[in-house]
Structures are given as structure tokens and as C-alpha cells.
Length: 357
Image (cartoon, rainbow, N blue to C red; front, top):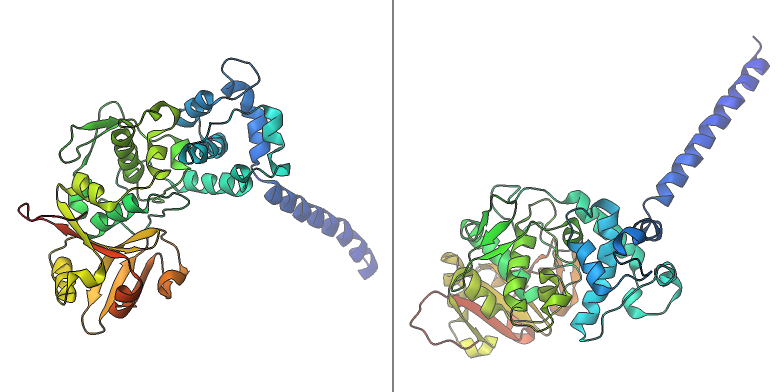
């Protein structure tokens, strides 16, 4: 065979390889699609076959254990839209398939980021562990607040996972039916079902660390929604993540302890001593800034710096305190605490103290 003939024989092989690479690239780019998934699942979720997905039908599909994978991530997009309405005290939406398919072309602020929300949900579902505690005890490391406004809840849970993980784990017991019982302090036990894939794809996540965080959210949500006349409109988790709150009641229900909150300067000259003592005894400490609250992690008296955990759980610059975060952790001088923080909250295990919440 001549060199020329060998070259001609090589060309078809090369063309086939190039076509294969192009096809592979197309498949990778196309991926699972929110709109294709909604088109496929809409007839099943439209339970009364009226051509409209109403709030109750969305909620039913969102909570169903039979809604999995990309279907769960897709219905979670609609449920998050409903949750935003709920959080703003607005009427919930109903959707025709045509309206859903046209979301990308509309200017409705509640409908922005549909593709990103869907893809993020898929990643959370894929990463989730089916175990209650995937690593034996709950961990702070993998918690992410994401788009929720429940820093006041997540930072307490994260702080307790860091300081006293056995105590946090003891609150949750599995039931024979696959659900869980959460034994909050000063409250009757709360039974919840196992989180659905839709719930796992929404809002807060703790990655592959287990189901314990969404179970706690569901249980605390049931406690909160029992006080709310709109409780039938949303999932219990979203009753927490769409409403504001404060750390005091969460400290109380998770630990049974009171708490005390003051501006940094109001704590007096012994603030550093109190911080050191709290961490030495594994008591919970929280740092408030305008519109946000975070958990104290440690204090270094040599450098006079406090290490803080932001429940965002992300890395990058935290502009409010001018610090660089790594998975939510960063250090700041006490001078910055005094200058820029609105309040410090200490868990108080002494039942005889008077408290200012």
C-alpha cells in the first residue's frame, strides 16, 4: 500500500471521529431541559385535567416521593416561584403549559433564573445522601443557605453541628414508616415524612451529609406553620425559608437554653473574656450585621480575631466585614466587630439569668 493510499484510508476514520466528537458535544450541551421536562410531566401533574397547574397541584407534585430526578428539579422551580409570592404576601400563581413554555420571554421577576434554578436543583438531588447522617454525626462543612432568607435558623443549626454535634443528632429519630420524629425542647415531638426529591432540590442544602438538615427544616416549619393561617399553601420547609426570624427562639427550641443579645459595646469591657469563655465551654455565639446573622466559630486572643461562619457556606469576598471567606469561614479583628456588627448573641445555659432577646 502506498503512502497516498494510506492517507485516503485515514480520512474516513478521521471524519467519523470528528462527527462523533461533535455529536458528543451536542449531547453535553443539550442536557436535561426544564421546558422539555415540564412538557413531559404537565399532563401527569394536572390532576383534574383542566389544562392548569394550580398551587395545590404544584405542592402535591413537589412533596410526592414519586417525583424524582429532573421532574423533581422542574416542579421545584414552580414551587419556589410560589414561595416567593408567599414570602411577599402575594397571591399564588397558576400556570398553563403555554405560560410555562413562555417563561424565558417574560419580564416577571419571579420567573428569572429558571434554567439556573433547575440545574442547581439537579445537582442537589444528585449529591444528596439517602442516609440521615451520612458521616455519623451532622457537620457544618457542607451546609449552604443558598437563596433562602433563613440565616437565623441555619446559622444556629450550623453552630450546634460544629460545637455539639451529638446533641443535635439526638433530636432526630427515624420511624419505622420511613419518616422521622424530631424532639424539640419544650415542644411535643414533631413527626415528618422523609424529604422528597423536590424538597431536597430547593433552598438550603447540606450536600452529601445526609437528610438531617431538611428533616429539621420540615419539623421546625410545621411548628411555625401551625401558627400561620396560610399553612396549607406551602411546604413546611418553605414556611421557614421565606420568612424572617431571630436566633433566640431557634436556640431555645434546639437546645432548651435562653439567649442574650446586645450591641457589641453594650457588653462592656469583658466582651473578649465572655467570647473566650463561651467557646471554651462549647456555648453558641452569633454575630449580627445589617440584615444578616452568622455563627461564631472561634476566637484567637493572640491576634484578637474572631473566626466567623457565614451560613452562605461559599468562598470569596464578604464585603460587609471586608474579609475573604473559605466555605463561609473568615476571620476579622475585634475592632471590626465593634465598628460594623449590630449585635452579638450568646447562648445562656443559666436558667436564673434575665435575658434580652
